[in-house]
Image 1 (cartoon, rainbow, N blue to C red):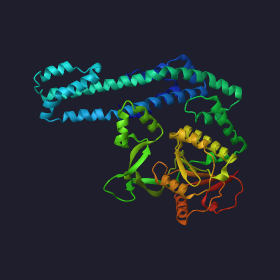
Image 2 (tube, rainbow, N blue to C red):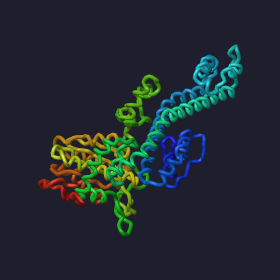
Image 3 (cartoon, rainbow, N blue to C red):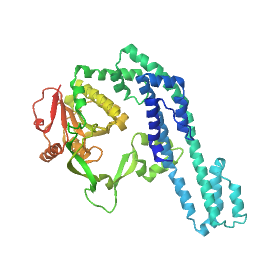
Image 4 (cartoon, rainbow, N blue to C red):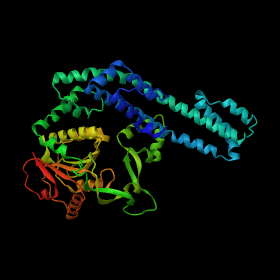
Length: 473
């Protein structure tokens, strides 16, 4: 299947077009497109989406969650199918002797799994002969090709089954949400902007109790306008001449910490299915262990190879280039003991505001929660980790060293090279090592903006000179 389908971009484009124009996708053989057509052709859904902004957002996020669920299953299946694909490719390379000795067993194996998907065992048995005579090369290739076609038909049936299993429940939830949520907001007097901030955390799943809890956090933005003020500053903005000096990756020059004969650095926990250890591939292929594999994938706990090539970084040069109007954002939130209580809620409120901005403007948003340790989260890609951050309590001392190293690593990467950085802290943080402070100054010279939201009136530790602007709450 085309990578565009597996990544979900094709289907997201369909959602975007429908919300914008009401256009329903044309008919094709794709089962997921067929379901989207079914939903979008419903007069109730079409009228709701095109007549009400809130209902349109509810529809979009609900259907996006459904698409992600299907695409995730499809990607799992594609990974697990790699063994079957390799087996077909190997069979094409069999020697004459191996074909003569193994054709009967191979035919039986293929027939057992794929007869119901159109593979004709009897035809090929006749071709090979009852005495085990070896068929010609063309017949062997045709057998492998028919095997591959039957395999594809089985995958399509499994995909349709995935959609059929959950589509009715999804349609019912969608209808109920479109009816209930706007009425709930009207009764509670919730503003649209407040709704968008809270709804953005809920992954398309309505829960009034959870909504009310998060709504209280959003409400702090009215009492402390500095939160919205600083959120509005984040992201590189072009000046009047549409040019700034900003760090950019130029050409194909790359740098690496050191060369090595082997690219494998070690083993890590992640959800990178392309780098899974053989143990994880085995679990993926085992019916009894498949649910374990799914859970490990969803929680980023697959054992995967960690490669040195992942450390490749684009060479950075400072050059006058048009600044992006919607740059990425890096937010560092202090979770040390001195931030317990109200500062925690204000930090959560700020992140909800920034997430809404990032989603609306398609900007990357990276959160680094720090005290003694530093915990990074790619916010738009990992809502589960963001919700866990909201539940996290502030404890311990504060050390900026590990947090700054992560910030600088991001600024060296291609994706966040032009990011602006915001600290949310009381600034009761001892100054870090002089070498890190030199890097701090160097990034500012290259165009990186550093902002601070300061909680309270803590004694000056000397950080002010390193920031472009600090607002105080």
